[in-house]
Image 1 (cartoon, rainbow, N blue to C red):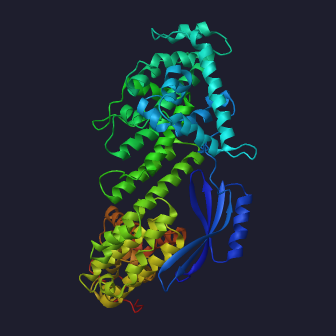
Image 2: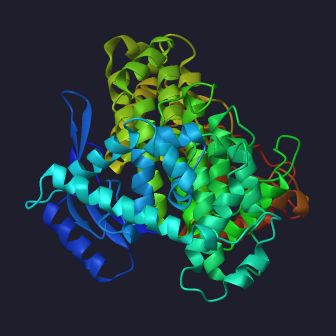
Image 3: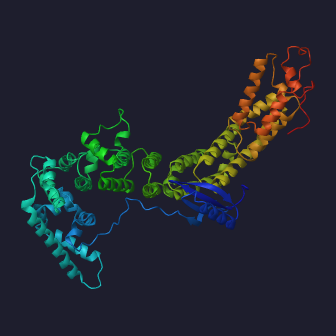
Length: 608
C-alpha cells in the first residue's frame, strides 16, 4: 500500500483480551465484505473495521468505526446495578441488594459507628441507636421512596410502606432475641451443630456472630475475629455468611489499607488488590521490598484463591476500580511512571483473569484514568521543556509506549506530525545543525520506535514516510553512497561498509533503505564477489570469512532468502571460489583490488 495514501480500512480481530490488525484494505466495501467473511469463520470473538484517514493540511488523523461484530464488552461477573433498590418485604431488606442500598444510604453513619448493614439488621441495639440519631433514618427512607417510581402511590405512601417493612424486621429481631446462640467462647462449630437444620438457622447464626463482634473496638478487631472462623470444613451456608460479613467489613475505606499495610504508593496498593482479589497475593514474591503479609491476610487469600468468598472478591474488585478512578496521583514519580504503573497493573490483571469481560471493565477504567493524566496542556508543557525536536518526538514515543487506550494513543500521535512538519525544525531533522550522519541514526531510531508502537497502520506509515524523507535529504546532501563507491577499496570492502551502516541503523525504511540495498546488491552481483571475500589459502579461515559476511548480511537485514541462498551456495561452490582456497593458487598473480575479476583497480562500470 502506498505511503502517500490518505484513507484506508483496517480489519481488527479479537482473541481473548486484545485486538490485532488482520488486514489493511483500501476499498470500503471490500473491507466490510472481508470482515463479514472473517466473522463467519468464528475464529475471532470480535471483528471490527476502522476507517483511518489523514488530513494533510492539518497533519491530523481520524478514526471511525464502520463495522462491528461481537465487539461489545462482555458482561463481567462483577457488574451490578448501582441504583438504590426499593425493599418491598423484610426479605428484600436482608437481601444483597437491600444491604447494598442500606450501605449507600447510610454510608457515613455506618462508617462513623464502625458497623456494617448486616450488623444493623441483626442487632437491636444498633437499630435503636440509628432510630434515636436525629433524622438519619427518616432521610434514608425518604430517599428510598423517591428512588423508585410508582404511578399509584405518592411519596408519603411509599414511605409508610417502607416503615412497615422496617417495623416487621424489628419484630423479627425481637422474636428471635432469646433464641440466638452464644458465641462467648468464640467456638463456632458447636453453635453450627446446635442449629442443625432449623429453618431460621442462617438468621440466628448471623445474629450470634454480630453479637460476638459487638464488643470489638476497631474494624481490624472485627475482621480478625471473623476471619478466624474461616475453616475448610465449614458447611457452604456458613461460609456464605462469613463471606457476607467479611465483604461488608471491607467496604469501610480504611479496612483494606490496614490489612495490606497502609501502602503510601498507590500503584503498589492497587497491584496488591489485584492479586488479593483472585487469591494470589502470595504469588507477588517475597524479597526485601515485599510487605510481610499477616497470617490473617494469607488465610483470607487462601479462601479467595479457592473461589469460596465471591462477595469479598466483588468488594475488592470494586475497590480496585475506585482506586484506579480516584483523582489522586498513582505514584509520586511523574507522568511517565504513573502511566507505566497503570500498564503494569493491566498486564497483571490480564494474567490473573481468564474472564476477559472482567478485564475489559478494568481496562475501561484504566483507559479513562490514563486519559485524565494525558491532555493537550500536559503534553504541551512536556514538549516545551525540550528544545530539540528529536528529543520531543522521542518523549512522545515514550509517552505512547505507556499510554492505555487507542483514543489516548491517537492524541499522543497527533502531536508527532506537526513537529515533523514545522519549518523551523527542518534543519535539525535534515542534520544541517550538526553531524548529519548521526542524524540519520536518530531518524532510524525514531522510525523503529514508530513501527513498534501500538498505533494504527495509517499513523505508522505517514510518520515513517516523513522520517524517510528527512533521511533521503541527508543522503542527497552528503552523497554518502557515492563517497563509499568512490573509495579506493575493493567491492567487498565497499559492500561491508554499507552493510555495517545498515546494521548500525543509518538508513530509514523506505527510499533510503532501498538505495543502500540496491548499491550493496549491485556489488554482490559482480563476478568473483564471493571469491573476493576470501583472503587466505587456509580453508577453515576462508569458511570463517564467508560466515562472517553472512552474519553481516543478517545483521543488516539482508539475510539470504531461499532463492538467494541457492544462488550464493552455487557461487560459493563454483570453480572460482574453490580455486581461491586451493593450495596451488598462483601467489604471484596481480592483485585484484576491487574484486571484480580484473587487475586494473577500477570498479565495474555498473555504477549505482
